[in-house]
Picture 1 (cartoon, rainbow, N blue to C red):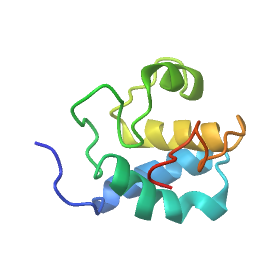
Picture 2 (tube, helix red, strand yellow):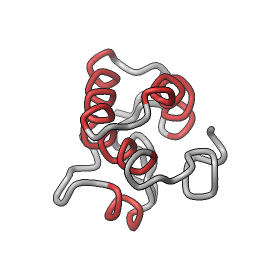
Picture 3 (tube, rainbow, N blue to C red):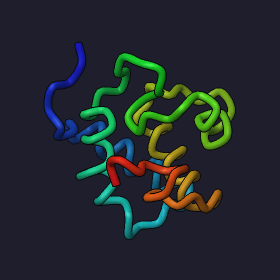
Length: 104
């Protein structure tokens, strides 16, 4: 059942942040991502209905570029890793058109 609360269960948030840190996501954006972006994008629902994937609502082609090969987009740690990779090593502006423009 989809989560109705914009607040993550501690285990989801912790898993997301652990994945984000593991890939070297910019620490200055971690709280904003978990407190603003993820609640706006998915309401912390790991499997929201629709075209976009997971907590951060990746487009499938973006997920393919940002995530680790074979990563499950429903896994909070993998979502954190992909977000961290997208805004860290891959250098995408999280507030721009390649990021989360409407939720940043």
